[in-house]
Length: 72
Image (tube, rainbow, N blue to C red; front, side):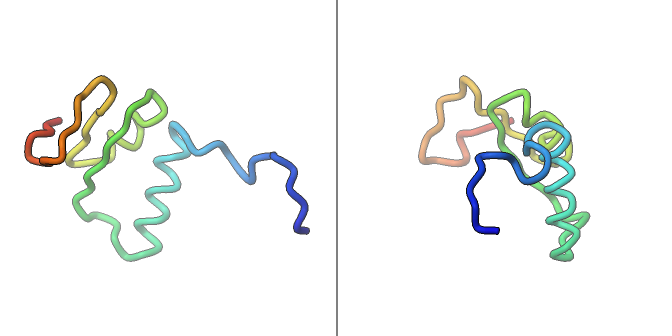
């Protein structure tokens, strides 16, 4: 109704919910089954990272402008 409440609209997008939403997003766009690269920096990213062929955990990793230097 156009009123801001501060409440979440649905589940918090972390953990399993993040993976569920990503899977739906990929499916809705005809991308299910494609090679997924993902990066995450918290425990709330584990389920999403588990879906990826190329998961990259960036917590505590020094990132550079050269993507080749970042390894999973």
